[in-house]
Amino acid sequence: MTNGQWELIEPLLPEPNAGARPEKHPRPEIVNAILYVVRSGCPWRYLPTDLPPWQTAY
Image (cartoon, rainbow, N blue to C red; front, side):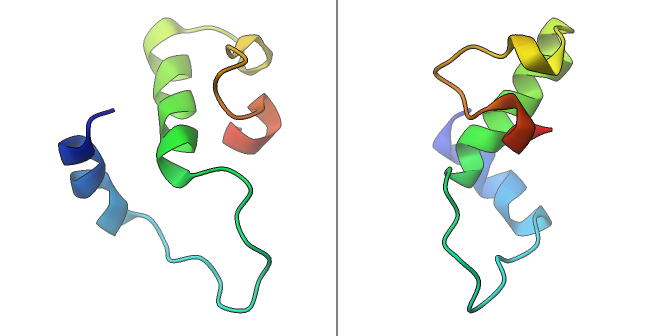
C-alpha cells in the first residue's frame, strides 16, 4: 500500500486506546495483510512471513 492510500484509510480506523500497551505491528502492515488475503483468496494461515502473523491480521 502506498502512503497516499494509507492516508485515505487511516482516518477510518479507530484510534489506539490511550494507556494501553503499544501496538506490536504497524497498522499499515496489518492492512496490507488483510488486503493480501482479500486479493489472493489464500487462507489466513498462509500469509507470507514478511507480513504480521495471521492471528494479528485476522
